[in-house]
Length: 320
Ligand code: HEM
Ligand SMILES: *[C@@H]1O[C@H](CO)[C@@H](O)[C@H](O)[C@H]1NC(C)=O
Image 1 (cartoon, helix red, strand yellow):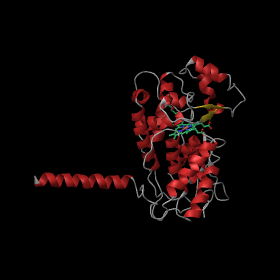
Image 2: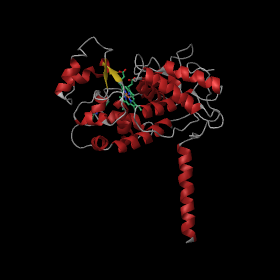
Image 3: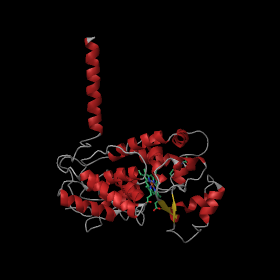
Image 4: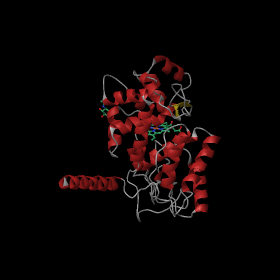
């Protein structure tokens, strides 16, 4: 009996110790004494921005993803180019594509008024992503906080590390596994494409050359996205409900109506583990929501700067 109790205690210690290591110093209550209004300030800013333009929820969610995949969730995507480095905003996957910087600036200005130099830009992105998803009808999760901001950014890293719309399944899997994200994380987090828009230039080859697409779906897109020109014409990633965070992205994949080649790679050919996850999420929105929230917490834990590393930026666009 005694040894069994000891064993269970030991097991608990091991489990707790390993989870502490995995999650660094991040904690959901990080600002509860230093800036108790932090979460409500971000939420109000996100709400107002989405009210003004529903797409902004999608844009804010994507900013957090593109931040985390490039040298960790450290606010590096928010830095403008300067004399010392070319930043991430003008990397291929970001240029003329990522948006929402003014919304982040407005939220940051409010936070600086309420609690100067306390809340990092990297954390603003994590909270704004969570709130965007929740406001548009998706799941809510406890967002872990305490990330600090980088002093620098890397265009080259952004070009190398962000997955592209023409990636095949194995390239997608390896792009996620670099960050410790599993196939399940890949399929669940790709469900982000239940909201937002994409430009003609990123899905043109899919609608003209990809065999794995519904013919009438391709035809209707070809009317808007021509073989040349119209590069910046946008279409919804989920043609059914682009401002609603629901499971219809997966229903679309079952019908070969995913907008991006990379989307449809998750549901293609004969049986694959990715395919069965897509089927599962199309049948069960709550399974999707649960795995999505888990995946977001995992993604938000990619290499955060903590302790004395980095800084709390005053202006998200430049180091102090
Ligand atoms: C799996 C690999 C992924 C690829 C290849 C990919 C690629 C893309 C591309 C090409 C666009 C359209 C960009 C444009 O037209 O300028 C887009 C939009 C978007 N992506 Fe992804 N993405 C991936 C995963 C993710 C993840 C993990 C998230 C979030 C956690 C995400 C969130 C979004 C959102 C919300 C939009 C719409 C943004 C807006 O309307 O402003 N994507 N993605
Ligand atoms: C996937 O893409 C990679 C990189 O472009 C390529 O090397 C690989 O052969 C492709 N795999 C499949 C199964 O098509």
